Length: 188
Length: 151
Image (cartoon, rainbow over all chains, first blue to last red; front, side, top):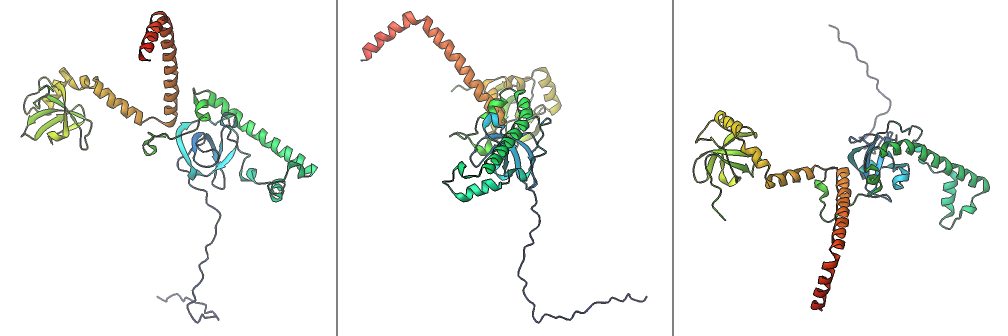
């Protein structure tokens, strides 16, 4: 049987030494963290940040991998917020989120605007008045928009929450550890 | 301490060590001063030899258990008169069941328990207050006398 002729192209350039190629880590698109069995509507306990210990409702996972949660705002003061799933304890309590529409919220919703960045640039002593008139109105409409989004997302949630007894109070309370609590033995 | 509970054929025991921990069985045969043969067909304990050290004796006996009886005989005797359900009604068994239930409570359950306990305690204290008020005539004067004496 005639062997197939394999042609190997010989290049013009040969390396004199085996150069060590500097290791380049190819940065791919960030892979969203695997959700460890967290389901939309599940109550989560936040473990870090300003809202430590607060019990919030999980809405969906964003493209960046962060979890979108909401208090709801009227119940415990936690707004629509992105949260790292590593800093969260999922509980077995679930709320019905079939009526909740959080589709329009994504990572861009949380991006800082020009006005905010400018304000941060001006530093600690910057007053609101230092924004131009149009920036102020832009800010105002932006904040109003945010409030409305919050209200619309929370409305359906709150009606669902009210159906279960004591669930509203549960979400309003913070999770704490006392002297006798053994966190490793707790069932969440 | 009375000599109430003996290691004897028919004694209902609770296994307190090993893979069968927490289960009940009956003593079928005594092998020596340290080991017995137990069987618990209705409680999921296989017929086995076990050191007495791993057992806690209960005050119940299985009627109709004879020395070396086979599992079938034991099952029949249990059908006639079940000491295992009698044991489950004791306070000790109920405490164990309560502990197991508490261990399973979820975060929301624990919250609800806390609220209900607070409500119960509030109800009790209002009742107590009402009772105290009703006995106010007799009790308060007696207390005053007692207080003076202390001073």
